[in-house]
Amino acid sequence: QVQLVESGGGLVQVGGSLRLSCAASGIIFSINNMAWYRQPPGKERELVASVASGGTTTYADFVQGRFTISRDNAKNTVYLQMSSLKPEDTSVYYCYTTAARRPNGPVNAFWGQGTQVTVSS
Image (cartoon, rainbow, N blue to C red; front, side, top):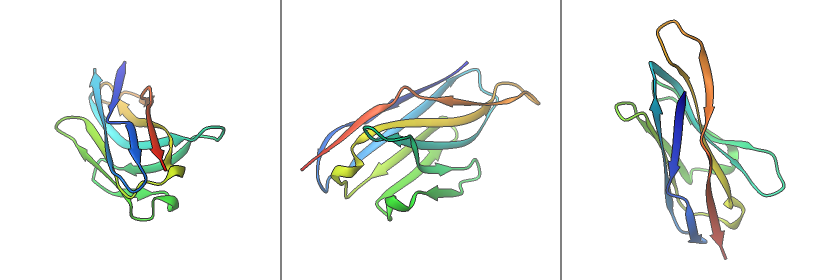
């Protein structure tokens, strides 16, 4: 099994910043995409940003240049630097990755437990 442990969530005021971290552990041969999703109250889970193993990044339109995703392959860790936070960014943020546990093995998807981000006005 692959475990994803998120940290860095919390309460922040409008316009503030937070940095989320997600570390993958367990039996891992290779990690492909790493991403952050969020699920606002009463809404479906949505992609925030993703970063491929080679470093290519993708962002949701609502990020609008405010967030930066990055990864440290040596540490199997993905980060999400969030700035200029808005009340509508309030959500549970989930880490996501696809990984193989052995050479030529299947690639499976894994989710973290989620970390709450609350932006107060």
